[in-house]
Image (cartoon, helix red, strand yellow):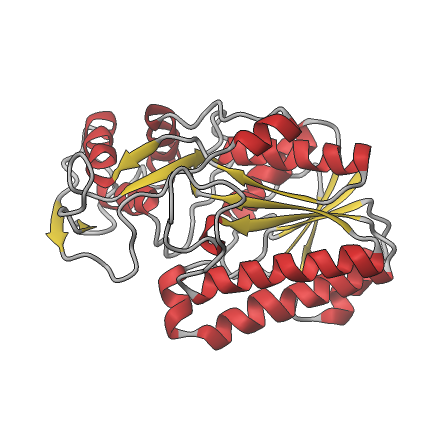
Length: 328
């Protein structure tokens, strides 16, 4: 199967591309390298440095003869989306419309979309399943939900079959240590902790320790990026076999708190990792945990690498390799 991985030089996309190529799929990567890096590209597939906002370029690449598209290219910082909605509207919505139209024009019928648990907003109940109300609390989540709605119409009107994969918190690095490019300007907890451990930031800000959780800090569902890559692979095989669209949550079904992860990171890295306790961020729920029962049933998928030790150890190896000159 020939697959175009859009955003395949980015953090999640590079793991997806590597996982697909390891399993014999023919992969090409399209990325504008705005957040991705050439460090994440491998010699066994082709790379096109293009922007999804350039319709002609995207359409020309799609005509090369792909069976499927995996779309992981998006602006993804929830906080920033509330300050710069225009950036997120153009990048996520306009960019995706270009991809969808180019895919339809090229006769591509299978589409795997990197969606997000941000489509659900404040949890009304836990764990969050696919039936949970969809009321995004930020503009980023709104863009992902709008894309899912567009996909349903393109399925109905154009016969484009899609899998929408709603991630919880992606973390960790390739257990074999092959994906080495680090995220640029990360905003998520684990890479921020790694940057403090590597001496790139002075301290970690812990946003609130007065939540109704066991240790007072926020609890989230962390999913190892290799488990995400496996889910994309299974989703593509499912679309190929059954040609029916679907949407599923991807999470570990376990909640880890900010302070738990911080303590584990201090232990595993052997670094002090200073932390400052600050106030809660507006809109941050106390706990977010997924139900992945639908993905288990439909795809036979379950998280294998998403324990706290593996997430932190694989992350630290990537950061320690990258910054070996500055870590003493």
